[in-house]
Image (spheres, each protein chain N blue to C red):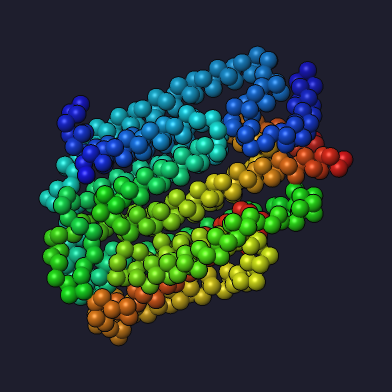
Length: 298
Length: 88
Length: 133
């Protein structure tokens, strides 16, 4: 009996695939899969026990979640009041960053000063996290489509030409968005912005271009080689320049690179080049994520 | 500002509850996008323009795009299965 | 419960509740995409909490003018902002990795329901063992 059921399950698993494939976008929701699941086998006593334990699990997890909320809210009640400058979190560290930041780092945006000068090592680690994540996605998704859908799908419709409105809009918008992203990166030490946000904006421009003109045309502009080269050189530049900075300027011994006049575009020592490096890494990663999810390759 | 802040916080919580309640995955992803946009306003109210810019580009832009693409990809896998089944 | 304090610290309280809702989604919902969204909400909640700790009423964003004439006491705390900035970008890479794992799971099992995936994986394992026997 058990064996029969097993074979039945595995059979229905094979058969269920074309059935599942008829689900279109509207059917993607969880409800359908549950119904779909139920017709497989949900009549035996074993499964009833399973459903029961599932109910217990649900009740337990609601209890856990509510308990966590209540305990944490209890903690919130002991927090100092919101938005007072006497709170213990406004301590001498923040004071130092705010008072000495302009002299020591040279960037008028004190947050950029903090993340790229005082705590630049942290940001190097983060850029590496981005690169590692892109590599993980690459490993997971590369060649996914070629095995399953590509042969039949791509042969039938080799990339439908994009909407003319999208093309015209992309032609007008892409340069502007790219320029804005560059502005955010280059202005990172003077005002709000910096490598992360500017890089993401530039990545969005590349994504828009790819959507409008297709991956074929995008491949001339930005291939996997470009991706690899830019990511590698940006990360290596960051690591080397930061190593240099630690040799000469850590603890704010006199640094060879002057901080320049505050407010000028070429000021703030290493912050501007580091912002550019981070921006390129982020831009490549964002575009890489999109390309991998869309086609399975950069 | 206090009123706006309270309103935005309520919207954030409502969004979160709606994601739990909705059955439709595409709707959940769109609510996620809306959540990011509301967070942008909250960052501005909390006087952190750096965060606002980053959240607008990364959270509302790229992150939601990845969700949509993943859904599209899942659909493509289904269609690929169907096509290969037809060939058989 | 002292509701007065909760109301005054409403940003922190909202962050905590958002965290709780995200946790509930993570525990209760069996759909993997929903789980990822819940996880992102937990991220947002923590960022909100951190940023609200750094906020000081009446103070402005930490952007000095070129002459350095603004007093350090007129800025909000820049440390949470820096931490959250890092966190937002890391959270999008975590989301991307989770989504790609989900796509791979869907490719293998053709479902987004975690319970089904676990059961199907177990069955596949058992079949393999039987084949080995």
